[in-house]
Amino acid sequence: MTLMLIAQLGVMAQDIDTLTVRIKGMRCEECAHKVKNVVKKLPGIDGITFNIERRTASIAFDKNHVCADSIKGRLAATVRYKASAYSPTDADKLQNDIKAAGITITVPPTHECDEK
Image (cartoon, rainbow, N blue to C red):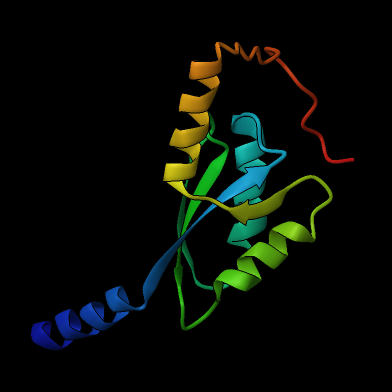
């Protein structure tokens, strides 16, 4: 019985995939919570982690129940949040370019994150 359960868990682990996207419109933890609520309504979502500074979400999902396009589509259906491709190397390059140019970016301490 135990071996059968372990074998089944191994198959399930192989079916988990991760999608990392930049979330336009996500600026704070409250925004991240709203994004999480939208995404978690889809079947097969295994977990979601956020990087507020980079405005990204890493979404673990069971590819037998949902696909990356469905996740992106779910976010696109909201008024406030849109998912776009994300590459950590692009973000690092942009950050280095900003520093090299001597540009300072100031983010206001608060914002309105209610859906309109």
